[in-house]
Image (cartoon, rainbow, N blue to C red; front, side, top):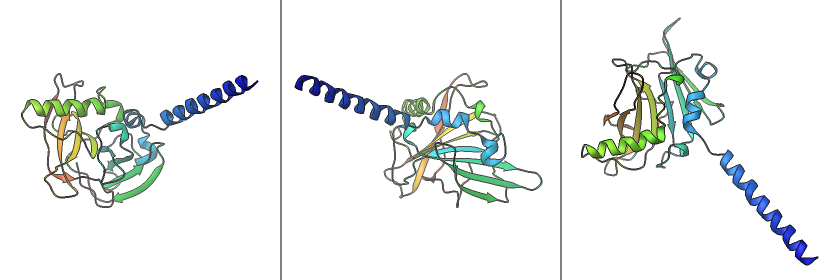
Length: 209
């Protein structure tokens, strides 16, 4: 009788641990899937975006892993009936958290549909960017603050813009590396340094990309 009771208790413990593991897995964010499937019409009233951002909600934190980014932003622009830039912060369930509208254009980048995002994952892109920069003799940190997806105006290429903190730089000011993954009009990946930028994207004080 005692043996049966012990086996029963062990079975309950194993089941509880298994359930906890499943819940933990379900709670993980797949940033690539989230970006590719975002309903822009619901968020910014347009099928295309100027930017899609994923960043650490806590501005003081950095990470090596894209799926640990937990704050998301969509930027859209409309010319008619008047110039209007819409910036919306949303969570992993696509629930709108904040909205800001500016009656001015969002310069410097083209529009893209999430379905245009290359098959290279953002995590693989981050690792590729590190290797690519290292081959150029310009190593970058292993951790990042945020990533921005945008489309160039002149070449119509999708860029993964990785923003990382410079250990020797000022607090809150970051650098970036622009990684171009293989895609329809790109047969070879490329990487290059970007500009100095803010580490955390604030929709109340946005910086165009």
